[in-house]
Length: 91
Image (cartoon, rainbow, N blue to C red; front, top):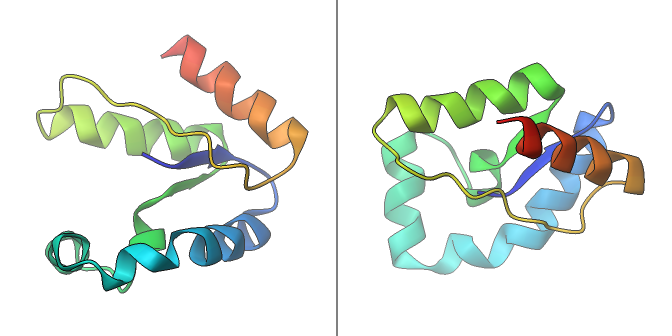
């Protein structure tokens, strides 16, 4: 799951939209996007502060996931990456 802990949510979401746009053309992802009620694959990324991203991870576990892998995307700053990995290490 692409995830970024950040204070600059709008900028990171814009970067995710650009990075993940190709998924919107894949039928398998189109079905996932439709099932989740969002408009594009980038909307599935976990982006926000620590509480927001942690809540997104918990939602996957609550839905029955046994593992949730956070993907490094390169979107966001070096500080965002440190915050994301710190959160991931604490889960």
